[in-house]
Amino acid sequence: MSARRRDGGRARAAGAVVCVVAATLARATTAEPIEARPSPPAAPPAIEIAVVGRADAYERLRALLDRRLSALGTTVWTRAERVDAGDVLTASPGHALRCWIDLGDRRRARLTFAAGSGERFLVRDFELSGDLDEIDRAALAEVIELSIGALLENDRAGLSRRETQALLARRGLGPAPPPGPVAPGTPSLLPGTPSPLADAPALVWQGQRLELGVLYGARGVAAGLPIEHGLGFSLGLSDEIERRAHWPRLFDGGWASAQVFWPETVTSAAAGVRLETIAVRFGLELGFDRLRLRLGAGWDFVHLSPETTAAPLAPAGARWTAPFVYQAALRAAVVHIRSCHLWASLFADIFPTAVDYGVADAAGNFQPVFSPWRVRPGLALEALFP
Image 1: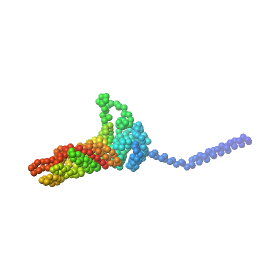
Image 2: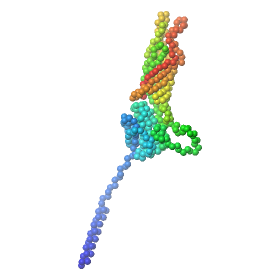
Image 3: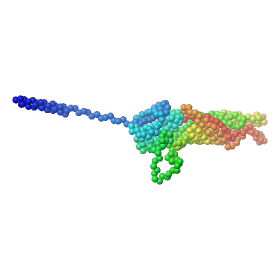
Image 4: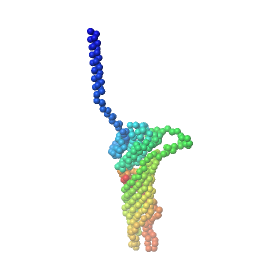
């Protein structure tokens, strides 16, 4: 009897375990499934823009470019002490593109662009007026926007790593790249001969600039006579010549001016003459950033009003004359105040034909009153407004 009870107890215990397991499995099969939630999409790579320069320039550029670059992607703005060639040439997969804007020189913005892959680059110089005014900012924003768009849309646009390293080395931002292998058939260069690649022009923005000016000038007329002086206006159109990276900035352009001299009266023992002169000039301008040469020509429109002091003589009527004049001027930039650029010019008016003013009597005898110089030196100050 005892053995049967023990066997029955074991059977009842085993049955209880089976019931518990079956209930657990039933709950597992009827449990609600866990809803699978998709992971949030990764943020697209951003465009990083680093500005080297003054804090006010950084704020003005950011306020303007943030709106224009919003269609290209998210922009991240930073300030930097300088542009490092190592940072430019290092790949940055977390960024779609990186841009450095170096405003250390008030007259030039140096732009460097690097694709996130670290394989395509753009290096550009952009001329400024000196004050980063509204015109500068608008033109600079357009260049930056077009350059970023070109690198983002075309994976073959821009410069290679080796070309970029060479350009950055010319700017003093890093070592020059080691010489690469010479292709078969390429002529070798003698020691000390510059490489053709070293003389290749950098990518430079070439923009025209229209300037209006107000000038005040004075010039000598002849020994012992008062100096002619007066106010005038000028109009200039300049453009930057394409240059090599290690050369100074070169400019060419055209100009025109009109100046009104204060009336002058010259007298002698026999007669006198009152002169009212309007000087009109036009020509070309060549030179560097702050030192330029003007060559031009024009006319002096002179209104003559003869006056006599001797009783037998009758003055001739007033009339206009227009002698032709050549002009050469050496100009230097003096100071830049906001959008006003002040230039000083040392010039010479050259008259190809001698002009004498005098008195002719009834017998045809000519008595000169004065004879102006054929080369008349002068000095002018000109305020230009772009």
